[in-house]
Image (cartoon, rainbow, N blue to C red; front, side, top):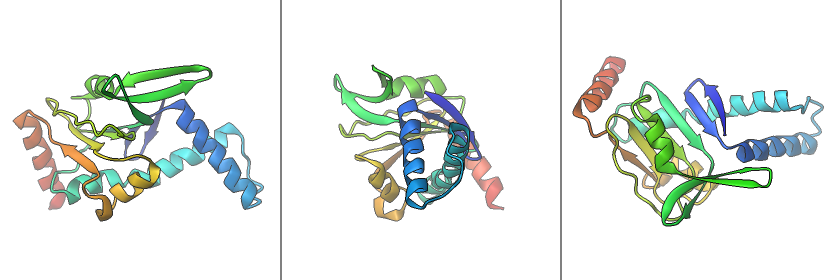
Length: 183
């Protein structure tokens, strides 16, 4: 797992997903006959730039669904699946495969960020429970990247679930910050 800081928050991305993005960028460069550098540093810079552009949907999606946009956010980007009847994310590192429950990632970061965004497919249609002080956004029935693209628009308004925090003071803080921004 690698950590990437973007304009919209901190991203935890599986290394295999990062490698997949690098490969896609190299393919695009070859197809377009771009003579740009394709070393890992320049590719990773382009990945961060793509994330900055694509993660803008997060706060907009929350606000569009009548919740205050979180001031701070953390994103999980990895392949999601079901393992032993649990919602998990998978990371491949060489010949090793790591399977980690999504709830473990949420528990680790809840309370440190106002919004937690799980961008990992959910083929088992698992439901996540509210946490004490972080809003959670996760896919209810998302199988892949195309579904995420639709989920970020009104076309997929039921694909992403928003779970507000349990603690009323956290909700009040979110609403207060949203009201202040609206002025």
